[in-house]
Amino acid sequence: MGRSNEEQVTTLTQIYETLLNKIDDVGVHVINETGKTIIYNKKMMEIESLSREDVINKDFLDVFLFEDGQASTLLKALHEKKEFRNMKQTYFNNKGKEIKTINNTFPIYDGDYVIGAMEIAKDVTKLEHLIRKNMESKGNTRFTFDSIIGKSHAIQEVIENTKKTTRTPSSVLIVGETGTGKELFAQSIHNGSDRSSAPFISQNCAALPETLIESLLFGTKKGAFTGATERPGLFEEAEGGTLLLDEINSLSPMLQAKLLRAIQEKTIRRIGDTVDRKVNVRILSTINEDPIEAIANDRLRKDLYYRLSVVSLFIPALRERKDDIFLLIDFFIKKYNHLFQMHVKGISEEVVELFTQYDWPGNVRELEHVIEGSMNFIVREEEITLTHLPYHFRNKSIVLTQRNPLISVYQGTVEDKQQPLRELKDYLFEAEEFYIKKALEQKNFHITNTAKELGLSRQTLQYRMKRLNITIK
Image (tube, rainbow, N blue to C red):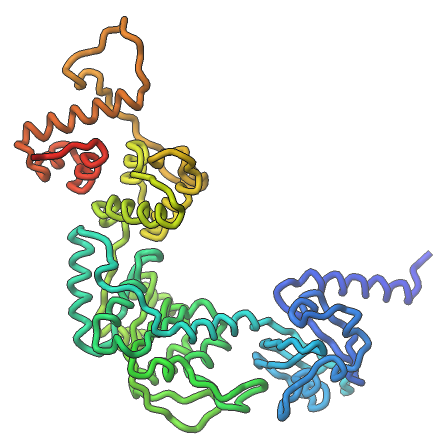
């Protein structure tokens, strides 16, 4: 027997309720022509901190409260028969909890007759909290040029060029892979300039949706859209100081055009306003890819690039300045010794070899995370060994190359087969100590020449000498 129409409707209802509840990134709220809720998915319950029973079959205005002068986009869609796209809205549930959402809302038709309205909402309450936190922490710049660790030619050249940029208000584009320390250089520029006493505000352009980033940058006029309040943007907040725009290539072309206008004319206009406001802000920006490639792939406007890159700084990747690895290792070990109340002295020979061979795609940030992760696995040991390295790092790192036999080198002879075997690590430690001392003697204790002879960088040789307690009088 076939199923009745009522059974089919029940099945379809169960299907769409399951479907809506499986959507975990947007809330869905539907009201009928009388303003009562008929659909309310799990994500919407989470956003508004209410249960299904609190809302279903209840009059919308019995559950939600809007401030004077503001109206619900859901009710406006129902009564005015209009669609609303990317509308920000602030309201309260019947328990007094403040809710902030960005909504797409539209009426539901049966022929020419509106039978309800649907709202698809994204929760931005947490994002708003992050914005306020960002605004409150403006000027909290702790990095200066002294904070930049590295003595390699590659990094020292960038530091010297960066110091020169502190003398002018020109825009600076800082180019570098993720994890190279671009914000550290930006803060150093600000703190070394005559704007150091004014605000320094940093905003990651990829961290927020386009609908929020525009109002965040330029500010809003009260009533510009539902829930809009009179609020200055980051340009105004950074007045007299520095505004860092991180990952500038993540902005949409439309926002890049507005940003270009603001930089060229040194004025901004709040969303919904008709008044242009003058701003005195130095713009620093960062990009984590080759800007020419970003332009070719339409991720960066060419005219904006020329405006932002009056000065361009290219931060080298860690693989391009491996001489600095051991300085960074020492710094991070001391940092986490202090934080974890530990007494780790260094890294083992096997880890030295692995670290010098590895390409460090995550750069300095990855190195720090590896050191921190390794020290979490240390109990009483005094050095980081292969067994302490984070599992994911050991898996993706390259295989250690085999060592050359040192038996014939160590003390110039092959050990007597009758003598008991010693632990390999002790044997290799003493063999390495002997061989480095011998090489130093042959090169009249000249560090650079000895390092070249051994196929090591100067920094690597110095690190090994320190670990082996080899000193030169």
